[in-house]
Length: 444
Image (cartoon, rainbow, N blue to C red; front, side):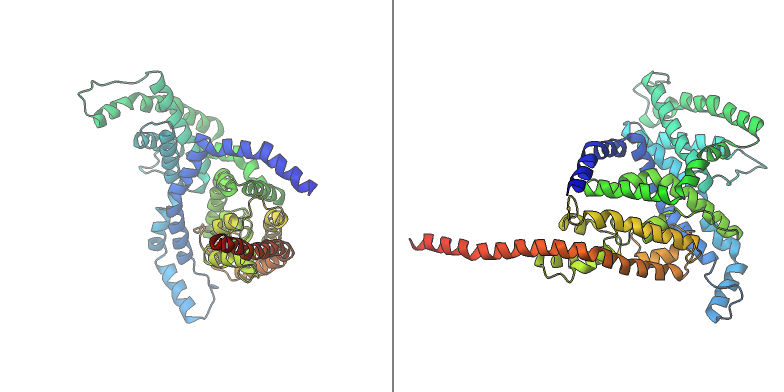
């Protein structure tokens, strides 16, 4: 209990206040919102990618598989067009979303800021070549650049407005026209600052700014694929949840650039038929670690659904369907798991054990690495298979992890169930006494 109190005190005193500040920081929120804007396009692109690369051996004799392979091969370019216009250019959507959200946080015009961000990004990442705009850095390799361009465009626009470095039109001019004149100087400022920088980087290093930024972030991306980094992110997420703070919203918001950079590199390698490089992707996080939601609570929900406690049984049965779709707020706040000392250890450690087992399963080649981003509400058994290109091994791994999680949660659940049963029995004994007293009062 002393260890529990020490951990809880440390989280409440040091981690929780810092996490709240980070989560509410305008740039962090803008980054998170930018990825949310891009997510529908990324999911559609991921689905198209699997359709273009059927999950069958090239030499299969299965009639359905053979027909699908032949169709995909014949119409490959046509099938891949939606992918190229969604996931293939996801950084454009991210950059627009980041700038729009940050501008709204500063109470500035969102559309104008988003357009300025897009111009920044295209200027440094896709200079005109042979009469067309190269798309090389519009996918996963440009994510960090897209985010930074969104920040730069809005901060520059804000600085110039704050210092009255702008063209002001008379009040009689319609707002839309006045706004277009207002942004003239920021547009010019972007060209004056970024274009010479881009030319310098190309001349000095023989690469575009996104390549240079990617090189700078390479150590961070590489470190993210290590087991200690994954476990560290998980520990922070679970401690925040335990303290009543939405840990996933904060931690995933910070990890999203890494997730998208990693999945972009994996997708490119998958299309090229090369070894897939990155373990730490959103499918890995959602479907191997958090089966049923933060805390891997699907196992706990299944135990609660057959509990002898009326309270736990009702919460468990109410949470089964949401749990299969990775939604577990009912069990987190209904049980509750927040500030629950009895269930503290499994709530924190079970996801970390899932991550460790899945990490080694991926490295040993039992399951493939993620190549597609799927909706986080996809049931884990389906999402894990979908994310790795519709292979079957992830299904077996998820089922094995659910069974393991049940056994890990079981002893702690039994202790908690005993406590709740004692409370329910005490409440039942007190109720007749209260009724008797009430009845005597009426008779008198």
